[in-house]
Length: 244
Image (cartoon, rainbow, N blue to C red; front, side):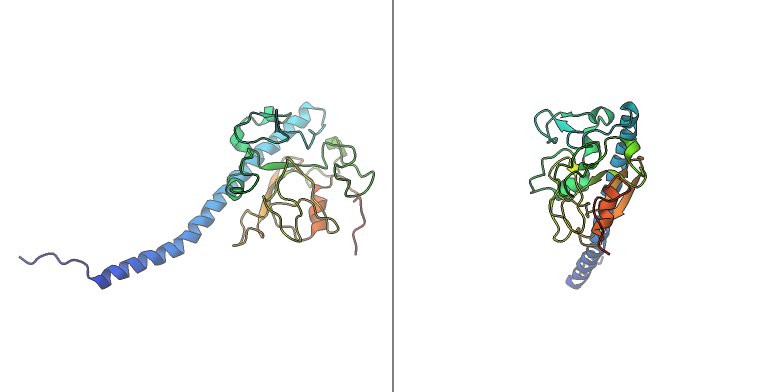
């Protein structure tokens, strides 16, 4: 009876080469699928934010929460892992995992913000009413206190995402607090995240955003910094002149 024939060395090498080729093909596809799943999950979180801001406004005579204190812990101006959330927004979204984007969590590892439990930020031109905290747009520039002061609730962001790093020519500050003050072409401050659906470069992707009216979109990277500012500015008239 003839014995069973095993694989030759050449056949084994061919099989290994095929497996390696398949891994090389599938790894980027699986990585992209994982990132897209995280993007969808983050967008789902912000849909809950959209419903929550609508409920909050209805319960508070259309007044916005303070952009610097809408969600915090008892000991910090933001919430770190292991801390109990507080702030006026917390009763409307009482699920801690909703406040963290998994994509942000992965990218924040090794940074100063890997221990944060909240990765979303509120538009600082809402809910303050007085002079903007930075005064970077000039003396007397004010935000709004109420939704009725927002010229177009469907075109003004309420919450968004930031990168835990800066991008030269795009953003001067990374994610570092619970509010978001977007700059313009003359003065860079904060800017929208770029890590969702990035085409091989996390500086070139987009951010999930929720508007004052509650709807959510994925915003591709905004190259025109003045256009990015308009998305956050709640009034019809800009507080500065755009160079032609």
